[in-house]
Amino acid sequence: MLTLLAGDIGGTKTDLAIFASDRGPRAPLAEASFQSPRYAGLETLVREFFEKVRLPVAAACFGVAGPVVAGRARVTNLPWVIDEGRLRETLRLADVQVVNDLDAIAHAIPLLEADDLETLNPGTPVPGGAVAVIAPGTGLGEGFLTWDGARYRAHPSEGGHTDFAPTNPAELGLCRYLQSRVDHVSYERVCSGIGLPNIYAFLKDSGFAEEPAWLAERLEAAADATPVIVDAALGDAPVALCAETLRMFVSILGAEAGNLALKVLATGGVYLAGGMPRRIVSALKSGGFTQAFRRKGRFAELLDRIPVNIVLNPRTALIGVASLGLTADAE
Image (cartoon, rainbow, N blue to C red):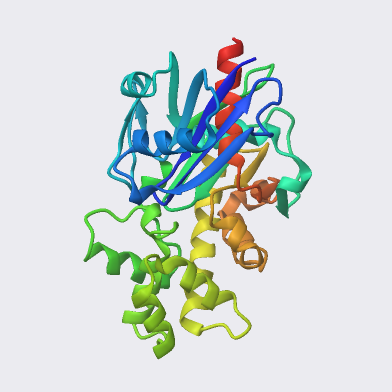
């Protein structure tokens, strides 16, 4: 029986869990979450986890929010460098694997169950059709799966860092606003946890609506403005500035999800993963996402046939990392 340390490493938090091969990737023996910025590196965090759980581990697999090249990754929104060789040495493990986090999430998609999903568009899935995954969390991850004749194989990408393409005058204004402040306006700048406050700042500075004093105080005191804005947008008495911020966010996400669906011809479906979609289900179901997703001219009918689902399970990345690690050992 193999015991595996699996980790989902993000700019905001890191989830660690220990899995056993006889229990599979959905039933961890132990798990814990950590605030990533509080630690100097992954090794320190893992050692603290081992001191708490005290379970023997034979191998490790980590999904990292950033590109992985030759077993080495620099976390995009965190000053960590993660290296397989160094981890093997410091953790004293013979087998350590580091993969992109969207690679991990994509591996989990075929393992998800009905309760893990909320359907936005049922569509008509094509058996063996490519599957697209777009995941706004702290940053914006994108990936996809292709059928090799026997099973789905996952592929990571850094599509979240491609150029933001405005689709209406308001988004053009947002793009120009950010171009005066950053050197590259990517989709991550407007469609992620770090992007939502950028939309809010644009709307506030452009005079869209007044910022209530109580909200200004909360934002000033918050370490992360995104949950404050989301809560004020979805509350019983929505704040106009926040509601418009979330509406614009949802529309941009829909447009980019449609872009990804066209690029990989995702006739097998599109999955919205990451931390943000499961927090804003009602906003995603309000219609703005679907309209933007389908607004592709002559290909609107094709996109209407593509299933779209929100991934509700917060452990999806861990499931994928565990599945990948346990499968690699078995092979």
